[in-house]
Picture 1 (cartoon, rainbow, N blue to C red):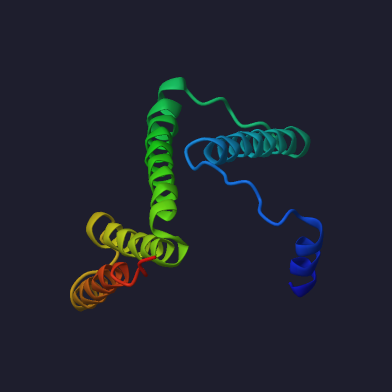
Picture 2 (picture 1 turned 90 degrees about the horizontal axis):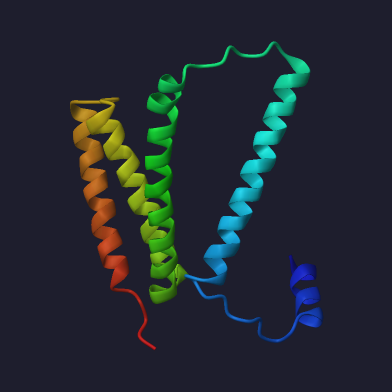
Length: 149
């Protein structure tokens, strides 16, 4: 790590240009995601054609109901969350907001497992609820730790 930092200090300009969170950064992220998705899809198709028996073609209504609509909904929710988290980091800084995102994601996924999937109940659910409440209280308190400039 020291070598990389030293090389970067010697060979990079002293201040890199700022990336606009709603412009250049989001655009480059989106283009990279499209490229990686296309490459992975091509690799999966090539692997399926070369190595195994082809899968029977699914019926269009089954694919639409089972994969496309839920996948599109999840992708839109993730994209909105990613964009809003980028803007929040721009406003509040990495130290506070990223920790808040991680804690919120942990509590949200736990709530889904408890309320929707019913993976646990009884005493375990009560202990989880207490831990989630404590975590969210700490997230709120962490928000007050932002140093004013």
